[in-house]
Length: 190
Image (tube, rainbow, N blue to C red; front, side):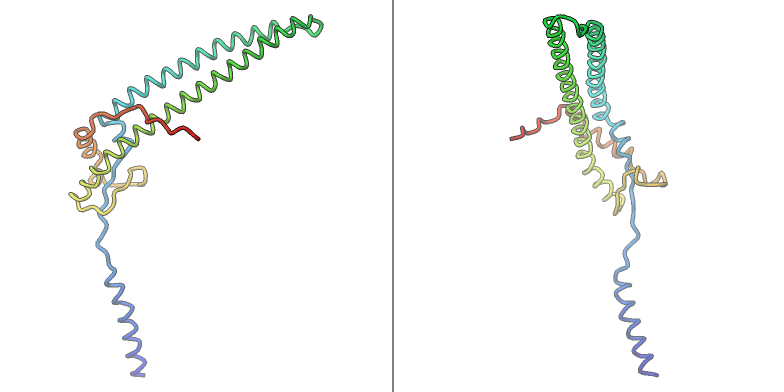
């Protein structure tokens, strides 16, 4: 019995020793609201103004195309020749309809390209701001002894004392006052 108790005591000590050695200090967490960083920094506001101008231009082009193509489509529908019309009249109308469809397809491609370019520019702006914020967040983590930085959207609740967003914004305004809204050209497909 004494041997068995000694074995149990040794086994318990062997198990408890690694557990005690693995005890980690409590995590210190900071929270950063990257949406607020994007919206509040000087670079973010400048980029938003430039991007809004581009988006307004795209919307104006969409409206213009809808109006012109809508009118032209109504004209085509109302001038469609009857089946008994001369072959020349039918051919002329079909040529107009084909030309209309070609121009409409080209306009849709133009709009898709403009939208793609806009989204690439937006992503480029976000990347620049994020890249500028990362070293600042790292510095703040070191200053506060934090071991984890979380995005505000990843939390359910948190104390205002762990939110360092305003500090990130203030420092980012000094280190990155402007960003480019012109996304770099993507390499051509081969």
